Length: 121
Image 1 (cartoon, rainbow, N blue to C red):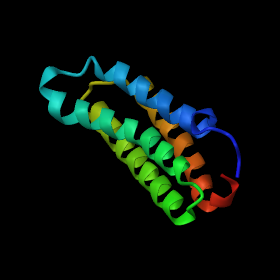
Image 2 (tube, rainbow, N blue to C red):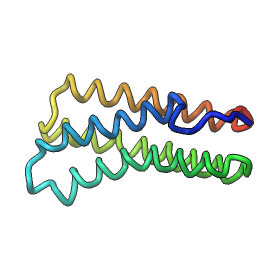
Image 3 (cartoon, rainbow, N blue to C red):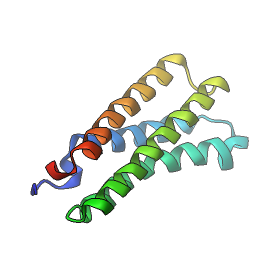
Image 4 (cartoon, rainbow, N blue to C red):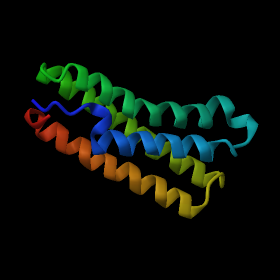
């Protein structure tokens, strides 16, 4: 097992950065979205990094590690859906949509690698 800390991994850095971009962009969402879209997209995007951290702390237990990485992947997919809603509601530009979704897809590829190769982590 690697001595690398989760915060040093590319997947964690990408997911954390994405959550922070979403936080900044969602500040401009209408106030009536506070308890729906804004809260949901922030929560799901942050959950990716949180699930990664939880998985990392128990990576010696492969089944638990895979379960938490699966949760991170699920949260990442949920985030993409909320971003799609933000675009459809015209709260974000197509450029921001592409930027966010591309970063989320890159995160998903890395999560998939972790799921398929848990022993490397």
